[in-house]
View: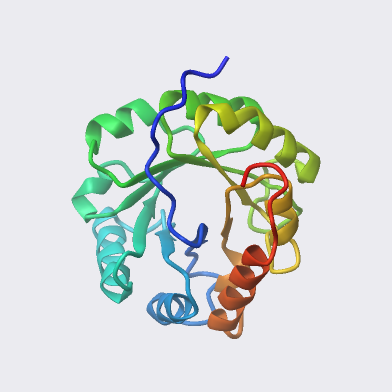
Length: 222
């Protein structure tokens, strides 16, 4: 059973989270971020867990300086995100939402990576503003998490989670060709990595993703 619906912090508009991966990026991350923001993106999250914490924090700050007013620069998976001045904090699948709230009570957005409906519901009940559910489609970015969950599972998760107020982002194999189907299935947004990091023209890739999202009407949750 879901707890009563609570007011959750709003997602950026458009609700497209761009996740960094400098090892797959064709350009420096600052260039990709600048191109993405110029194309209309308003949400980027640093996922460079192999870097020392100080370097992760510094990268968040640098991307935040590039971001236009109202955009969100966040951090993936590292405790004490408030020390980086991050506006958003995305926990790994083993992250503790309650502990994160204690460490950073004023964080603008708190999310978590989930790979099943059960774990997504647990995160929602713990107070996450949003969760990512992955992999929706087959992807090289998410090895080791089992087969693709598919759009049917995404639709089921969207329907199950709707009463709790936690937003659901589709992740894994999301491209300009598939993001519309994710919205139709009920996703509140999407997260992408390879589709932007590996693009020859990241600005064009982001523009195509946003256009495909905005041209699709959700049949479940809008």
